[in-house]
Image (cartoon, rainbow, N blue to C red; front, side, top):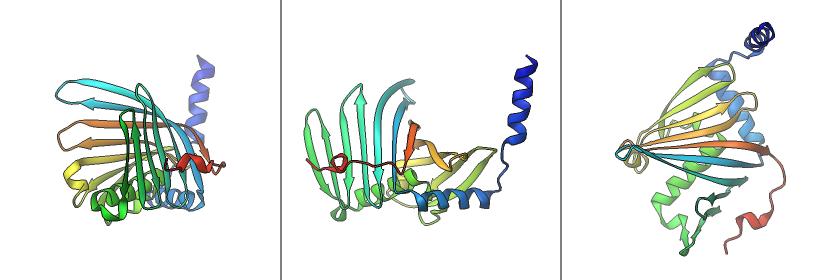
Length: 202
């Protein structure tokens, strides 16, 4: 018992206390140095009307400057790939390719997806009203959409950060109708080689 209390006290002493400007600076600095990111994720979809949850698992990969793979592996299979100006999606029913440059909606969504993955959304005053909250190693950015199409889709987007690594550790998106989607990133690997086939549009 005493050892546990001493450990908690030591952890509290060693925890770094950051100011909001320091949080922004550390996150932006980490994003500037990030060439790639790979992680497992767990997504929980909460439906307000049904009071039920749907949990899915998957793997993501990011490669600078404009490549992102988001793959669900269970309980269903679904792949979303962004490669430059092209989005490719595939599920058990087939696949679909979209030219991002020709779709304002997808262009905005993909741009904000990338900024959320990297964490640069904390400085995105163009699209959101951003407030930072937290202490020690746990901080979050609360994003309130300013304009469409994000304003039509989401009430709030919350980005969680692990300040020990200055990395995004999770995202929570609250829809206009009250449904919520939470994503927790695990086993993050920064600047490790990402095979080009992860972003192959096939």
